[in-house]
Image (tube, rainbow, N blue to C red; front, side):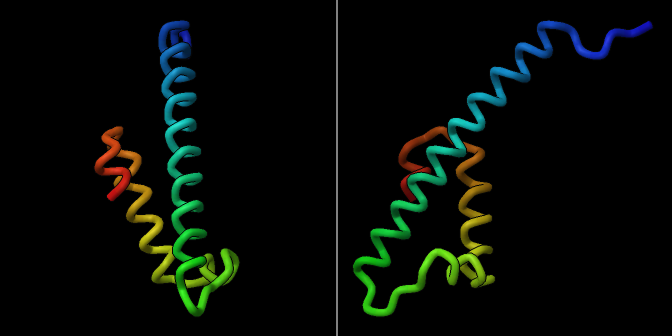
Length: 79
């Protein structure tokens, strides 16, 4: 009977999951900080709830997040 995943595969998945989740937390924290900073500079600002309902903004966040998932390079993440 085949074993579902070896201990090595499980350890690898856990390590990758931890690293991925850490990267995503950092990305989302940086994104929230950037949005907050832009809100402070704009004359008319939308709250987070209002932005979350804006399809164009959500599309931009999704595309930027996909790009962020694919790199560790600070320069690319900053862009």
